[in-house]
Image (cartoon, rainbow, N blue to C red; front, side, top):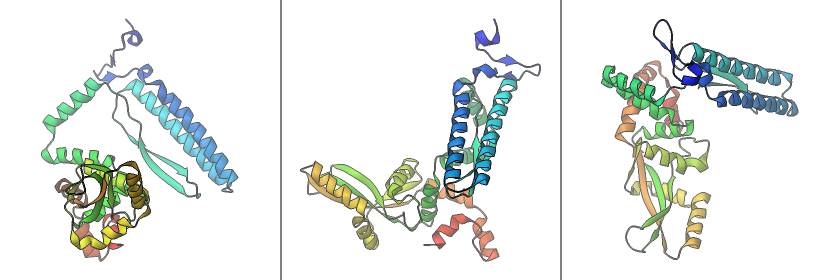
Length: 291
């Protein structure tokens, strides 16, 4: 039976598993075509917006580089099931500036192989290596705005957090209809201010931050949240959709124990280096300095 019909991996003379090239999904080719169309559209937009031929040429180069990378990865997959490699792509943004991004084109493996590799690593790795794997996974799920929020909270100071609930006029509301309005957005210089509730919810889900009780010392920040347009709109919508009492729940958000451990691991040695040099050694601490 041939390799194609059996669907099994061939083995080279050295005994290493070889992934047949025809097992790569067709969507890899579709992705390459899609990126080509995107590059053409961006080049046309660049010319139309007056960015000139230089921007269009840079876009074409970025497209060609990405396609070469895709072809190389497909060839590598046909020869050897190697590990993922990060690649660099450069493109021109809407304002004409060059932007570089690191991306990884994975060599697809079977679930069985992935599980076997994970179990083998669990035998060989140390506690520190296991912790680094966990932190790397968590950080890979964050967007830059969320990293800025985590940086601000790393000081240990709480931030005002508010929810909107409905239920009895007495006691704790039985149901929340809008959550995670937080004062962290502006001091953290978050770019998407309207997404702060989403960011906070994500950080809570990752256990990088904790929700705490109301802090009366943050009264001014609670009042600022109550005056924001999104909060007032959520209050009005809640009143329109229920006959129950609409209540405001005041809470706080702080960095969690896990978040502190992650932050300490990632910034170890940087603070001391910055102090000895007389300036911030890392943009991580610059966020709090800019409050």
